[in-house]
Length: 247
Image (cartoon, rainbow, N blue to C red):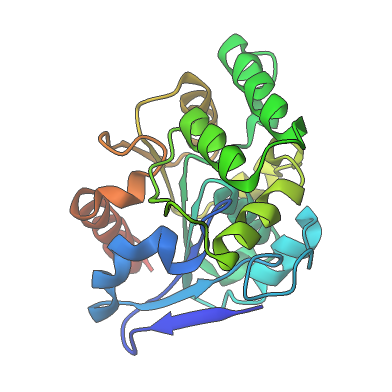
């Protein structure tokens, strides 16, 4: 699995990207943290420059991320990467210093909630439409979830490959997230949302309640909360500092 690293001092922070947008494209606004932390940014299995289709199931993804978690690592996951971070942390909770998730689409935890069911239906229709080009899929998906990445007019091959990788992953609400095991681990946990979508709010509220997590809402970039830059970074810094002080 392709992994980028910057920063050579301070606590280790693993930044796990979500769907479509891999690596530093997701975490560009967090590069400034490299002066304080050792940042580890994987490209999840199946995303370029990794081989296409590599390890796209939940177990393989979680195991691949778990292998990057050294003792004392702070794990931070956005969107689909938040779901994978929850699964990976449950595998080796003793190595995780803290867990932060940003709008994980673990909608399986809140099935039956009307806004959740409506939102799942909209997303399923997009993923089921195989006639969509990569660009059309990206635009419909981003508009639906409230993502705010930049898309060039002509898709570079690596961008199209990333979109293709996202389209073949299991739907994130199919993941069996072991909240009981995570709650028993009693890890410091922070849950971010963007205050824009009732389905994401429902998931974030439930995870916060079940894991006794800190809960933060930062508006302005919808699903891409980390792209707010300093508002997100300041809150994350404070949380990581508090967990280090409690160690």
